[in-house]
Image (cartoon, rainbow, N blue to C red; front, side):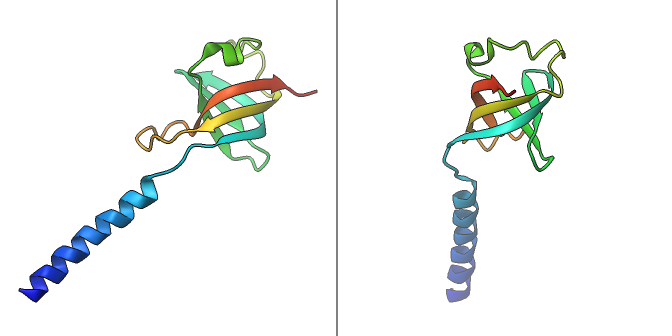
Length: 104
């Protein structure tokens, strides 16, 4: 009976550890990113370390100053503020654009 209780406890503790790793808090990140393109409501950027950054937009007014959809701004550097997603089911995008400004 003790062995069964130990196995059951170990099983429960393993799920508790997994859930605590999945839970994240959202934060606002500001970074200089190079715009790579747009497809299917996702905006693709590259950071200074050449790492891909995929972002979404909830409010179109946050990017209304720039036409990122037509491809004319690919390769341009932007100062992007985005809120990291706290939804682990959405693995495609790591954040939601809050503000975007072109750099000189």
